[in-house]
Image (tube, rainbow over all chains, first blue to last red):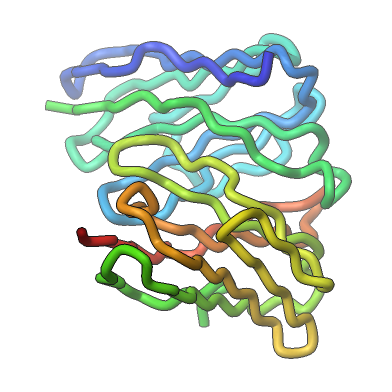
Length: 116
Length: 112
């Protein structure tokens, strides 16, 4: 199994809603990532978890709240988002970010979020 | 200066053409290097890793020059299906491990 699975594929939410994006991998990878991607821009790193601990938070607003319940799962909780937060949210995993050669990212298909 | 910079593109080439993309990185401590391909409205997918000795995978050749902090990708005999955005990706040392940095991407359009 070499996949990263993200749900939902599409999400439309209002600015007062609370929703969550989910990500799952069964490759035994110990690092998991959330990226945000706007149209015609590269993926922009949001959070990194390594061995289920938050390693990197790229100064992301608190309306985005990550959670790593176990080594296979990664969630992104969304609350009080703004229309400018509409984007493709990509989850990725890598074998181990402690070693450069093992830090090759595999991406999920993404969750396309629209905030009204 | 951006940590990873790429040719802006877009590149518009006819089928069968050879096209080359360039990328530079600013952190000399960068350890590993990759090219990813991203199709429209899809996720990035690993195309190939890049090694100092150079590596080839079919019509694709990647090169790394550590002294110049420069990475390249050559595509020979372009196909319509090669149309995509090509992302230069670098692993840089960071607290607790490595951090993956993406270049802005170069868009390629291959025309019949």
